[in-house]
Image (cartoon, rainbow, N blue to C red; front, side, top):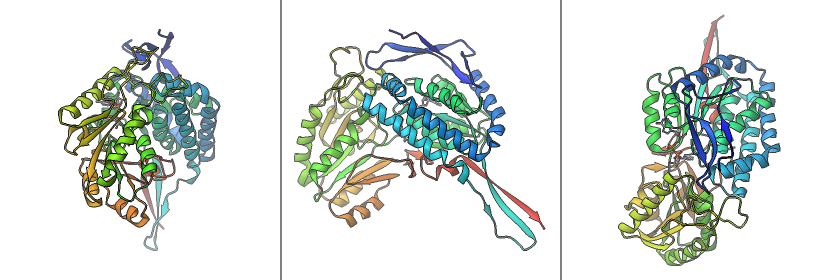
Length: 480
Ligand code: NAD
C-alpha cells in the first residue's frame, strides 16, 4: 500500500536521511495504510538544519527587498500553478475532502501573495532627540526561526508562519506534524524553485523528538508553534534556555452564542460550519453551542437532523461530506470524550460512536455528533474535542450566555447571533476571545490579526502585526 515514496529532510537545499537512519511512515487516514516513508529527525538533524539556516540568513537578509518580494510572489504563483498536485497530496495525507484541501491551497496562495508585498514596506522610525543627536530605529530580522506545525491545516499554518518570517529576512527550520508532513516538503521544494536560496528554508521531519530539539536549540532565535496547549507549555519551558521568543497558537473551546432575537435558520447553518468542517479538527471550532431557551429545542432538533444525515466517505469520494479523522490516536481521543459526555449525563441527539465506511473499513472515521442537555461543567465542554461534535448548552438570557462563554481557560474565538447590531458589538467586547464573529461562524483572512488568549496562547498570525513577531528593533544614535 505504501506508494514507495521515501523522503528525507530538506537541509541546505539537499534531501538527506536522518543522521540516525531512523524513519517513520505517514499513513492515509482513510485506509490506515502507509503513503510514504520519511526521515525521523532527532537533535543531530535539527542541529544541522539550524546551522544551515544560520549560515544562509545574512545573505537572505541582504537580498534587495524588491527581489525578496518577487521571490515570495513567485512562490505564491508556483503554489497556484501546482494547486491540483498540492490539493491531492494534502487530501490524502491529512484525510481532507478534496474541496476543503483545494480551499487550503487557495488560502496558502493568498498568504504568500500578501506577505510578498511586505519586504518593501518594513520600516523603522526617526526619533525625537536632542538637537545634537541623530537617532533612528531600525527594524531587523530576528535571525533563525523554528516553525512547529500541526496536521489539521498543514499547508495553511506553515504558510502563516513561513511567509512573514521570510518576508522579514529570517531563515527558517520547519518541523511539520508527523501525521501529515508531505505538503511541507513539497512547499519547500517549490520555494527553492521560486528562488529562495538553499539553506534559508529547511525542513526536518519527525515527531516530538525533533520538535523538542528545535524548541530547546540554543541557536534558534524564535519558535512559532501551533498545536496543543500541553505541548505549548513544554515549548515555553524548553525555550527558557536561550530566552528565545515565542508565538504560541494553541487550542480552543469556543462558544457559539444564539440569542432569542437570532435568525435561527442562519444560526443553524453557522453551527454546521462551526464544528463539522474539516471533521471538526479546527482550533476555532464552536464546540459549545450556547442557545437561548426560546430556541434551544428547535435548534438542537434541526441540527441533529442535519448532522445525522452527513455522509462520511473517503476524501476522494465526490459524494462525501466528511472524511476520516487524521489518526487512530485522534479517534481514540474523540471517542473517549464522547463517552465522558454520556457518563456525565449528556443526551446524544445523534452520532456518538465510531463509524465504518464502505470501501474504507480501516479508516479513522467517527460519527458526527450532537450532545444536548449539557452543562458547561462537563468534560465535553471543558476539554478541546478536535472532532466533529457539538454540545448544546441552554441559557436563559444574554448575560448568562456571556458568562458561560467566558467560563473557560481558553480564549481563541466566539460568535454571537442576534438581529440587534449594537447589542452584538457590545457582546463582542465582553467576550474573552481573540476573534469574535457576529451572525457568522468561521472565516479568517490574512489581512487581520489572529491569535489567542489564556490557554489558547499568545502572539499573532496574519495581518500586519506579524511583522513585529518576526523582527527586532535596533536604535542607532549619532552625536552630531
Ligand atoms: P500537538 O501539540 O500534539 O503537535 C503539534 C506539533 O508539535 C507537531 O509537529 C508535533 O510533532 C510537535 N510536538 C509534539 N510534542 C512536542 C514537544 N514536546 N516539543 C516540541 N514539539 C512537539 O498538536 P496536534 O495534535 O498536532 O494538533 C492539534 C492541536 O493543535 C489542537 O490542540 C489544536 O487546537 C491546535 N491548533 C491550534 C491552532 C491555532 O491557531 N490556535 C490551529 C490548529 C491547531
